[in-house]
Length: 287
Image (cartoon, rainbow, N blue to C red; front, side, top):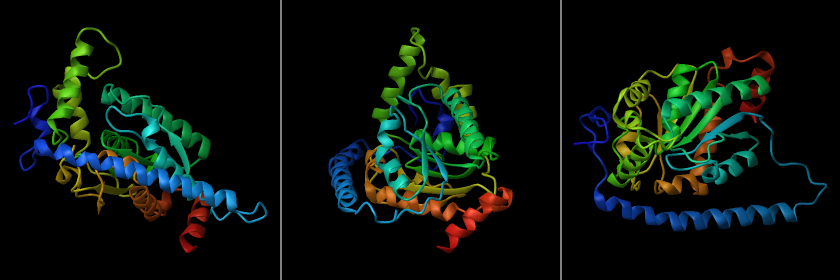
């Protein structure tokens, strides 16, 4: 059964929440964050030791990538992923989310506006990388606006059953709804958790992703916050990693999988791209 604050439709038959003790797995995030620090220091050392006259080893693909943080998180949580992508030649953009705690429909509308600006500037569609709730937002936007999105990568996003998460997360959402009810602006309301807002967001997450939008779903059986089975969308190429839920945002090994997914996505929907863009894709594909 779902919590009274969550709509029953958000936990379809065949899915369940993680066990209460699963949250203990999130302790792995300490080691995963440490791995991120070591990786960052190693990269800085390599840059310092590189001669100024050495050629830039990065092939600038110029692919725009918008990073969308998870529930209760902000842009800062995806800095490791962003740095890895930039090192591979991708152009990264922040979602401009300080804390992802607002109405999902409102957040999606703001992200669409952000995407329109990026597409207008870069003159090509954007790939979306979303962690947890951010991935669910990415999938919904891709369904509504395939003219803006060329590919999506989700990390620990329970698209198939949004309520298949730990009860601690439900408690946090309930607090937000309570604050919204007493007049605090910019927070999720009860409607976002079990009303028409939640239903619309969920129904959009079940609609088919257009054929020319590539889709990779990254999941982990070590996820202590979201049940891993809810993260595997039948339309996506599923990629398993060994990481905690929080660790997916900071572990450089997961960031490497994101890079691999984005490279696989290149060329999907190429017929919809402009001729100059297609040329860039051909060169990158033959490298």
